[in-house]
Amino acid sequence: MKITIGHTPDSDDAFMFYGMLTGKVPSDDFTVQHVIADIEELNKRALTDELDVTAVSVHACAYLPNHTILRSGGSFGIGYGPIVIAKNNMPQEKIAKSKIAIPGKMTSAFLLLQLMIGKFDYTEMKFSDIPAAVRDGTVDAGLVIHETQLSYESEKLTKILDVGKWWDQTTHLPVPLGTNVMSNRFDRKTIQKFDKYLHDSIVYGLEHQKEALEYSMQYSRGKPEDLIEKFVKMYVNDVTVDMGKDGEQSIRTFFEMAAKKNLIPKFNVQIS
View (tube, helix red, strand yellow):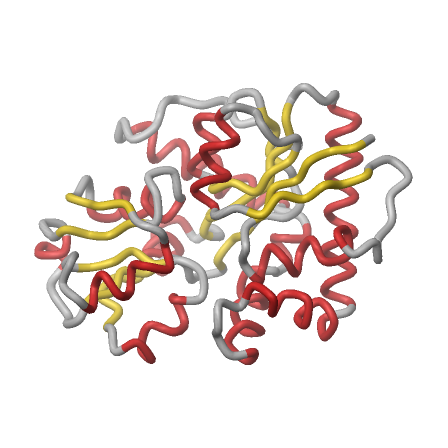
C-alpha cells in the first residue's frame, strides 16, 4: 500500500522517521512517500485530509475528527517545552498585555500559552523568524519552539516565561506538543499496523543514534551538532516510542482545560 507521510523539516522528526524513510526498517505493508513542510502548514493540510499520515500539533487534533492519533511518534516535553523570549525581562502581567509573535494559531505552544496567561495580542510568523522580530522590536516578545528553546541566549535574548515548566507544575504530566495522525479512511487494523511501523522506526533510531543523528543534521538550520543532539534527545524519549497512559492523559487533559475556557471545541479524542 502506498501512503503519503508528512513530517516537518526538524531534526527530531527526521530522527523518528530515519529508519522508515531510509529503508533500514522495511515494511511488507507500506510504501511511503514523504512530504516535508513546516508544522503549521501540515496542520492546515490535515484539515483537508490531504495526506494519509502527517505530523501535526496536538492542538490541531481538536479540529481533526476524521483522524486517529497514533500512539508512537509524539513530541512530549518532560518538564520542559515552549518558552517566551524578549530582549529584557518583564513581569507576567506586562507579558499578557504585550504583542507576542507566535509560530501559528494551531500550534500547541499557542494554546498552552493561552492556558497559562489568557488571551493576548499576537502576530503569526514563521517560527524561525521570531528571534529576529523580537530583537528588532517588531514584537515585544516571541513564543518559541524547536531548537530556539536552547539557542536563545546565543541570540542575546532572555527567557521571560517557561510554558513547559508551567504545564509540568500544573498537571504533573508530559507537555503535549506534537503527534502523528492517520486518516480514518483507513480501517483500524491498517492504522495500528502503521503505528507499529513508526514505533519500529523510532526504536531503530534510538538503537543507532549516531547514524540517525547524522541523518537529522540535514535539518539543523545551521545549529551545531551538539545542540541538535541535545534537542533530539529531549523530544525523542520514552513517551515518543509509545505515549502510554501518561501521554494519553496529557492529551485529554490539554483538551479538557482548553474546552473549559472555550479555546477549542469539545472533542472526542481518537487514539490508536
